[in-house]
Length: 312
Image (cartoon, rainbow, N blue to C red; front, side, top):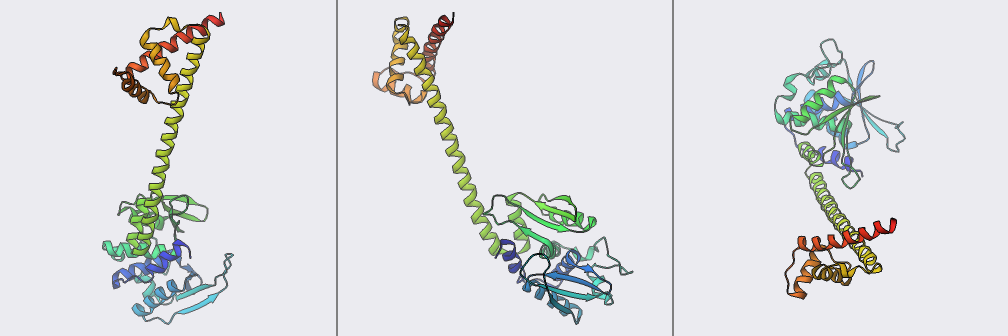
């Protein structure tokens, strides 16, 4: 079972008040329903979604619904459940904000459908059941999307999502509009809004693990980069020492610089800080990292002088 399917199954069992469930029906029908000559037809592969929507419509509007199982033409092995609401039953479709007084699609949702935060959550729940998906957090990217057919509906859904500070954005697609969220924390907040508690716990567990793993990888990469830099610097200093020795230049260095040269040769893999601590400990003469760097700089300058002379 996909992560999206598990969320939809969980929220199909969510206990809602009547006003919340009416908002959910509205969100579902407006984002799933297709108009034919005589009906509004809704399709889903999920039996539990079909049952939740059909039972709510029957309870609230006492309708004798037509439910059919048809072949899925979208390259899926699962059959489709189709719920048909007769357009002639205008009370249901008008009260749910689907059709206007002329039985045409209602672009602007009536305010009473989403009159409270809980009703807004219900509407978003219905929209998600109709056309939403969320990537499993184990995958490489965090992504939630809702696919909407009408421009006014896409603006509405984005607005409702952003009332909860979810930073939802709209992308115009060839076959409609995609409202999406990319931030992991915002997606987790959205799953909470849907009422899918188990899915939230799973999502957070995986997200925390991924974030911790990524943080560890970043630290390891930083440590490796620092180690590479230390080795590169030490190798450069050893090459400088080699040039000085080849040109009998040791006599040109004072006692303190000569001491730094000997310790660099003795501890070629030590960082500047580590080398300063070693010299201080073994000689009982305190030297700072800055002081040691100053001495090694003199070695580098002398080696550069020999290089320059060789070129000339």
